[in-house]
Length: 199
Image 1 (tube, helix red, strand yellow):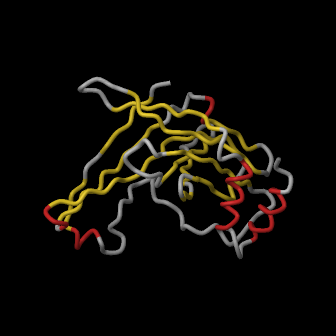
Image 2 (cartoon, one colour):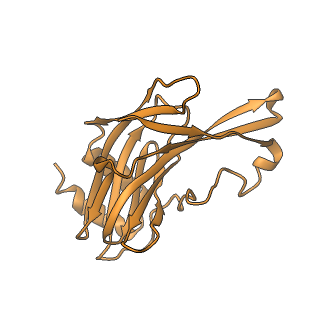
Image 3 (spheres, helix red, strand yellow):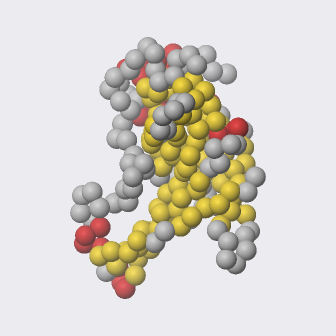
């Protein structure tokens, strides 16, 4: 499985980039608040997974999934990310696929007076079954743990990569860390109860 990756360079004055709202945000990649939502519906589901980006330039800053319905435009869901973990609560029933993941690397120039944000977009093929899933009943859906592996490409070709499935971190390890983010929300108790059923 060889998938192309794209890199964009955006250069601006450091002072401007430090203003609120000037960090990297693009249409469809707006990330939700870092905290898990304060509400929980009995009919909603929780989706989570992990990507090890140690061999990539950026960390994992976003994962995008789409929900597809016949005759309608896909609905975009940016997932929450932290330390390689990606997750999102309150997802409705439907068919989904992972569209893209990525992050932004930062370089400083001229003794720190200029900064370049280099967003890296790693597109995922919608026809790859490992990255498609269907929520038929409310529950917890684990999308797996993966390691990003760069692949050699030609001089004038886009960078390519593979995702290698990992055994660790497993469901239990990821849920334990995510539960820390859910403190004080309805999802804290739900995740704790679900964790008791995970081997």
